Length: 271
Image (cartoon, rainbow, N blue to C red; front, top):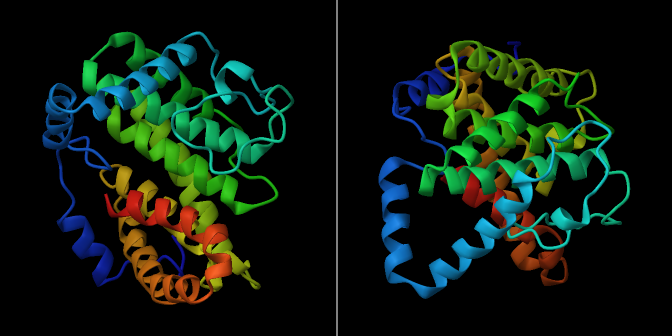
């Protein structure tokens, strides 16, 4: 950790309030049970479940992502969880940001099926995906957004599949999250000229800080320093909300450009 991510009172307080039971990020055991009950009661919920199940079955047939991944039309054609920006081609080499977003979609799709059904094939396939991406040399590209999106997917995977991971697998994934995402973020904040996403209240500010918070909270038991850093990220996040939301609401011509992405980030981080 560095001066930007120093341990402070906010971070320590967040650590003391962190739930020990997993999953705890975007899902809890009680929330999972409520979702199961809704499948019996709601036709809409069953319809959504069917779409997720259909996509999960496609993923079972695909290999894990690689840094040189080429899009498969079966996957990019109809993902139930939106990619926000669709790839330029459904069967061409994937850009780093495409790979990061596909990773998030895969982990959440397979994870939902595992949490709701306890089907071992979904668990095993998700673990293979998570371990493969954590073995990438790094999570960097021409924009930090790639790092943040990859960190978000890894944090969810580490949390949702924690009880199914061996000690060695937990160590490997936690180290990847800390070294390839959290420390990379701190380096950006501590740069002589920090990038605009680290200093200005723009939509990337929410997405990147939200992802870093999720990453830090996922590995808190492995390293207390990242969780303390999440308190700093939370402070920046609240500051950005005070600027971005009024700006978007006041400039209606730009709402469709920034607010959908911001809303997704806000909702996921709040969970």
